[in-house]
Length: 92
Image 1 (cartoon, one colour):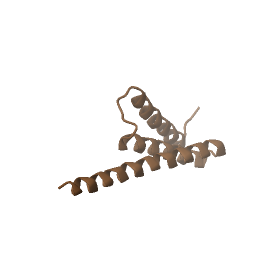
Image 2: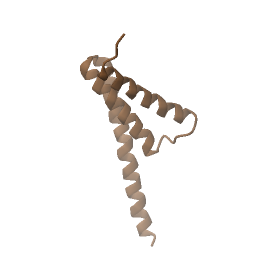
Image 3: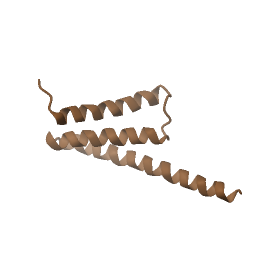
């Protein structure tokens, strides 16, 4: 079996998501950390790229939802930092 470049991209995306999940379960990563959401976003994006070449609607839907949820986590992280910075400024 020969792997195409898009297969390798998708497999790399799966590896990133699995790596983030392993670190989470080993308590080496905080689920609220930016890194966790970024790794999940990147992994889902890479899987979506591979699915554009080997279409599977169910897998695409799953990864698209995974990507949206992960991007929500990224936005939530930056929003909480911005609120914290505003609150820190009020205490002066």
